[in-house]
Image (tube, rainbow, N blue to C red; front, side):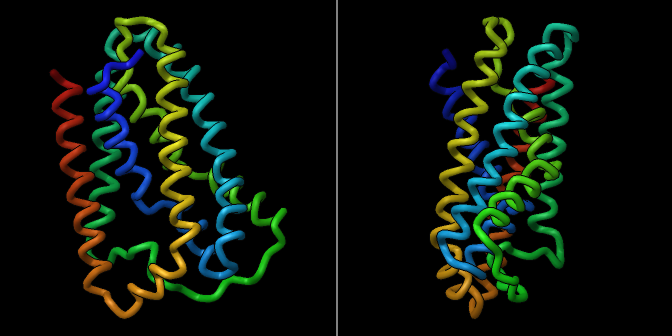
Length: 211
């Protein structure tokens, strides 16, 4: 079993990653705004297919990686820190946009197409592969053994976090977008806070990787 402190740290980083805008969140938000909550939740169901695919792929890949390379934890740790720094910069860079900014109207789609489009968006999302391949290894204690079980446990927890965040987005993004559309200052504050937090987490992760 994972230690409580390790799980708390993992859930904290996972939550920050979940609220970071990416193709999946933008897709769920756009469908919720264009077609309502039900369409957003159906789209999220398709998105979760990609999470499951990458979770199992990463779990088996991480297990093999730890077994073959003695410095695997440091290598993956450095990759995870670099990726968090990349996300943080894109959040605070000049000209960045919040996913809650209302864009052009989308065409209405059938539920089956919404689900397939969600799955396609998720499976083709490089952010997911990076998350599962670089974030999970930071919190796996390979000295304890049972690397596969640890990977599946943490991956499942990460999927739950992403499902809760994106489910909330599907339910409330329409109202939030309308509320924030006339308050651009709030959108800027949201981006700066999120980007700063990600950069801080990146620095901490980099230090831990090379200790």
